[in-house]
Length: 622
Image (tube, rainbow, N blue to C red; front, side, top):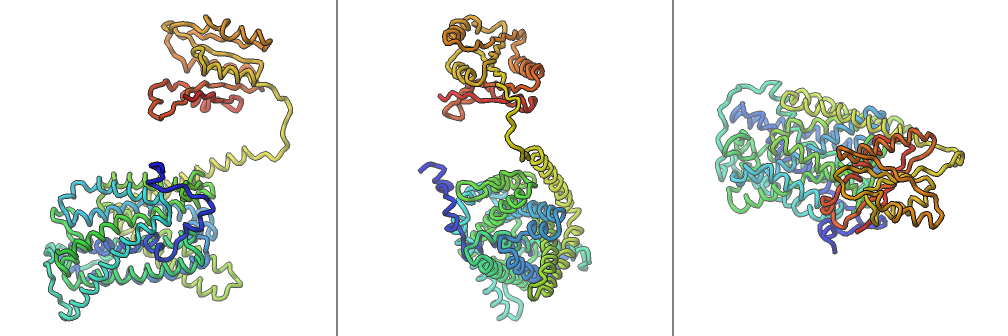
């Protein structure tokens, strides 16, 4: 087994695709880990905005999270309908494009692509934040740790959906299980203490209040930040095709379990934070701890269970970026199928994955992490806008879908559910955009039209190719002529002999071009008659022409280019075939030991030439 097979698995045949489909148990970590782990940073994102209220900020987190949960339930019912209506995968891009048109579809595509990139970055960053909360000594290495986790995730995802699900099941259930125990024990102690539990480890004191009352603007900002807990909800509807039959039913069951657990986690963390008087700490604080770290310490103290819980949080948060790895390649493929992204995203790799989508996501996520230093709170303001914009367009598209289904029973009720979802998420999108605009949301608002512009340019390119390549006429055999063969030749050796032999088969008109500089030892003229012309004359073949170009300044590429382009211009209607002798080495690093003029000449011919210049590689394998 090769090293590649050991790391990312053996290649899978297309016929093995059915075996790669997943069930509900694997679907939860693959498509739900992002949504579930948002419980670790969603409430904290809202509580961080309430720091100016001091200890009073803890009293407002439950109403804010409750409002978010109501919105979550609305989106849940909307996406259950989307899964049923689009069993082939009902992501926002597909739904918006088919029902609202290309413009809204591209808007949804751009929003979702940005959201998935930020999902990966925030998930990894939040996981490392959990680690540095438990071990503050690691804080200076935050970015390096983020990039290591990103590399691990990329490698695991290259093994395929089935292997990824198997790898992530244990961390997911450990994360959910430990947090449910914390919430269960915390609720029990709160109940028996009459609503005022005594913490095992006293939470850090709240910062002094600088604001007396919770104003509308502060409420909007806290709500907008807390909405980060809703990202990832769409993932299941986008990945329906990954489930085994019955796909829609398995996807709906997976979504239901994910949302139910998320509701318990979000409400439980918010309620216990209020009960224990826990407030968020400033991320820049030297002794910074996450809200989850403080809560677990308050309920269980800093014993073995604390470290097990924080380890599971670290693992789950770091792996939560897997939701983006599962969906981004599928989204990129759907967009590329309509010619708005490079067609390379359509190709499936050795493990039946859309591998180039994984490469792209890994690269973009690494750039984001580097730009923002891997700090979660710097990334949160950019987050959620793309998700809610996609929610809105998807639900609006579903309204149109149901209205088209004239014979579908209950279509008006379904349209109402999706319409209500579109209204709720649309209003939330505006709130999030306004509340987070100055803090960094303007970056996302700017990137969306830029990305749409790029996709339109790609579409225009492919449309032009289709127009130029379209030819339904019979084969044209008029004015067929042998090409003029040009062979650049620095010296006579086995590679150039191979090129000459092939050239004699192509055409009777061959021009061997030798660029000669004054400091060059030897001259092709000296051996030309003996080594080349004598055998050709003996066989009675058409004699090639040796063209020697002097080069006083030792330039090689420019004289060759000038000669070839001039030859093309003087022979209108005829093709010029340039045969390029090339040495092919066994190892990639050996390329550095040889002159790469052939590659440069090939590139320049492709860029500066036109349809009458044909470049032919003549390889010699070492």
